[in-house]
Image 1 (cartoon, rainbow, N blue to C red):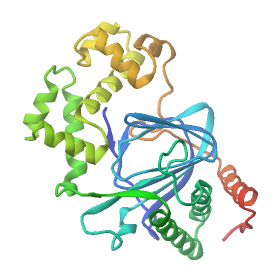
Image 2 (image 1 turned 120 degrees about the vertical axis):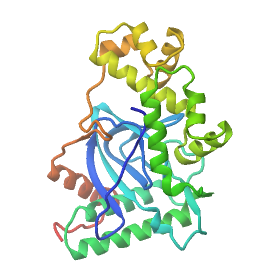
Image 3 (image 1 turned 135 degrees about the vertical axis):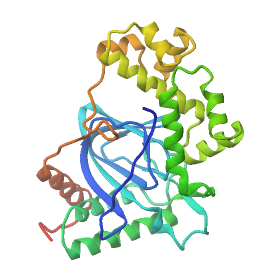
Length: 315
């Protein structure tokens, strides 16, 4: 289990993927793209270690490139707009081997943007509306709106610039290899030390590498993988909790309970009783098939109601 590297395919007309969907839950994953999430209806929880953000309708959050994250909907459901766009938007704007790390989060951000959050929500919804249309005009307009949004992020939000490591070209492969090694050796009580030896890194170097690339430490990656495996065993088998604890590599049952509850907010026993619904796409995302007319209506209603804009019926 662990985190998964997500390969994102962009629209041929512009370096971004724009879509609206309902979401049940997702595994921890990461990608090179920046990802803007706008909740149009309902609620959504987003996990980026060590924080869980609770988004409601009208909230917006920007997940930076290479940050590991997971998402979970609520029983009431949701409708969310996703804009995944390439760091290539900022080529020529920032120094070579530097990347932007933006602070845009309406759910409790300590560094608010210079413009109201509504500005970025509206800009994103415009992109969502035109990005779903087909044809030359829609593609040109979407590309222009994405460029404007990128410029607004640089001009009106707080951000840091961070150095890319020389191993960036192999980042996805290396993280995947570490994640796979963890998955295959969960019972190893010396897993942490064996990873350092296998991948030829010192503890300090690997810690800095993983933190820069994913936002998580090696211990957090191991704990997450062990909890994900234990969740699977709790749901799919009748094995006792102490056996599951041992099979997932926890040193003792007390540690298992502590780590499991920290990650899931429930004890293993509570999780076994209540469980959770399976993912629609177990590899990464839990997208739920959504009526296209409902999506268009939600986008159109936001633009008309909140901004008084006139939007075309079709392009």
